[in-house]
Structures are given as structure tokens and as C-alpha cells.
Image: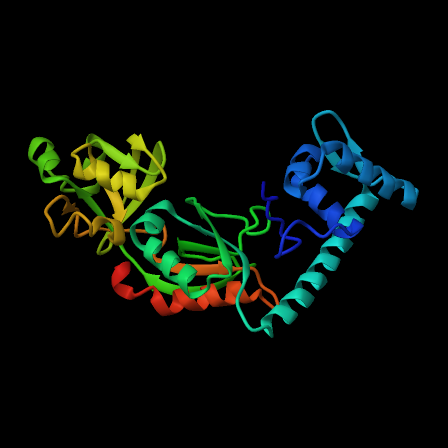
Length: 310
């Protein structure tokens, strides 16, 4: 069985130096999870931590049956371990960047809807262009922690990318309210934002607060979802099937509008703020990004065309 990918090494299991080992254990949060990530027995993880503490003559971790907590010295040591890991990764990436090919693991995260609807063909094309890259894809909505979730590139629609990440603009989208012709024929079309409270709402969460603007007038509505799901592709399909009204990004709604499966409603109103109107490729800052990360971000910039998402 292939050992889990660890951020401490782009080419396989984490480097077994005590510094990188300690950082991995701390970030795992438990010996059991650390053992799975490192491809070791739990007893070996515990033994190595004890040996490290014995050599130093200090306690680095306080362990209970349910969790482990860093001592003050352990926290300071962990920060130094992170610095060591960063230097090692930069050294490795510097060498790889002067190599004759792009290779190694690459972990990409993207929302389910855009992943399934638009990015599958791009992922396939990237794999064909760079056959030495092993691609891991995580379909997940919402914000992600690139470090904790060991993600190299996060593809996200947002209005405000994190200042702690490098964000490259890939494109734009806008948002519309829509429902199926059959649903509207049976229940009528909402004429004002407040009318949405009397319709079956298909939303990202069970309870949603929305602000809609028409010229100078601002309307606030609170909606409880008949169906709640963080996957816009699924919500769009349910709207086409006549289950209710929903707010969709145009890259999803466009699958139903031309064929008449969806009809836009409240077209004179704009949602403020949107759930996210700019598509970014987000990476961690660093002097020497891994070659496969650079190649993938550049590939996205070249291939994600505006017509895909607006």
C-alpha cells in the first residue's frame, strides 16, 4: 500500500529527521493519525518521541488518552522545526526547478460543481502534458487551509482571497436566481426579494441571509432551505427538476438556461455581496515553489477560458 503523502517530502514519506518527524506528529494531532500519515506503527511514533525527549532531557508533549498538548518548550521547538522544513523544501524545490522535467505529487482542491462541470478535461490534459506528476484531487466547497489539509493549489471563487496566500486570477462569474418553468407555472415567479420566503428555497445552508439591491433600494431576506447542500451542481439539477428556487453561479446555471430547463427570476436585483465572483488559483507563498505547482498554475492560466465561467 502506498504511504500517505506528507508535506515534508514531495517525493514520498516524510523525511525521518527528528525535526521533520516532530513537526508531522504535532500537526497530526495524535500518535494514531501521525502513524497513518507516516506509514509507521503507533508504538514506533511514541518510542521516537520518547527518545527525542530523553535525548533533550525535557518534555515536549503532554499526552493523555484523548489528546496531546505542546509544552512551552515543545511549542518553541515546533516553530524551529517548521523553519527547518521550510529550508529543506526550498532547497529541494531549487534543485527540482533546474531539472529536466516536472514531476512529483500535486494535491489540488476545487469546488465540486466547477470540478465536475469544467475542470475534468483540464485535469486530464494536464496529466497528459506532465505524465510524471501524480495528481490528487479533492472536491470540497468553502475555504481550505493549505497547510493543514496539505493542498498545493486551491481553486476557489471568492471576493477576498487570503492575504497569507498567493492568489492568481483565472476568471469571473456572476450570480442569478432561477427556477424551472414547471415550478414557476405552479407557484408563480417571485416579483420582489421578500417573495422568496414564500417559495421552496434550495440553498448552500439550512438558513441563509441574503441582501439584494435594486438601484438605491436594499432588501434583506432570511431563507430556510427546503434542501441544503454545498454543491451548486446538485442544487442546479434540483432546480431544473422543479424542486424550488435557487441562487446559482452562471457557470452552473448556463447548463439549464439555453435549453429552457431554468428561467431567471428577480433579474433586476443584484446580490450583495456575492458568494464569490472571482476565480483564483491559490498557493502558499515561497521563494521556490515546487515545479509541478508552478506548471499547474501556469497551465490553468493558459486554459481556463472566460467562456467557461461567465
